[in-house]
Image (cartoon, rainbow, N blue to C red; front, top):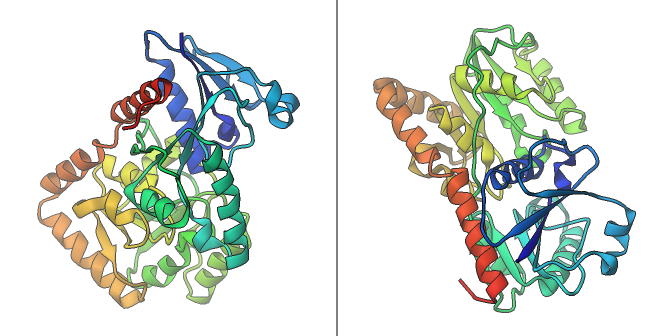
Length: 354
């Protein structure tokens, strides 16, 4: 019986995009009965006990990390992150999921080349590769040598837990607001939203996510300088219930990111029928498609014009817009996502190419 290990170590931080993806991956896989396969989950010590179906939980430890040649052999070892902390023995086939090459934007040339060399080493060792967007696949093919190994395009599954009784978060004082979410770092480009807010009197702006960085503090200083104190909120990490309320009640969702392998928040907002305004960078046009509105540059006047025009379009027929947006987002579901991974497992175990 084919044995498959899925490396879920990145769930140690479920507030990151990869951590959330890994947790949802495990939850979806655990609900399935897959004849002919057994699964082990390699997980951090804070991974929750509970009903994980027939999957066996293996806690990460020193041996599994630093002495990989002592790890059990599997038909397939699947790393859900392109820079894993744990590695299979040489007797296991290895699938490497690559989410993005964001370091090409975030890092200087020397550091970018160092990351590329590291990732190339993993690709050299891997049996097969999966990517989460066509944009990421093209980046991989342009910057790395996959050596004719199979590269599977499998879009992320996205879901937003529903909380019908969710209440307005206490940190939000205004009634009308725009929403954004993500780890608050320079690549997310959140600072361009502050001068944009100046164009919309009476509105507040909520940017949720890890907010301890100097970049996050600079956004609050920028708000003070533009006399927007009290209208720009950086509440830090928020609960799923708070996130659901903010998505459900915002006037629009803003996502001006410069580097995304997928862009999960775009689809999360669309699942609730919200208008999404985003950049033309990286994977975002691929994921948002014709159902998002795009900023061609980050001049505040241009951004405000796009928002004003887009909201007028939405308001002209809210029901039709919301239905079409939600239908688009529902294509990125976990059933389709998991079907892609299970097909990859079968083909890799048999030594086939897609």
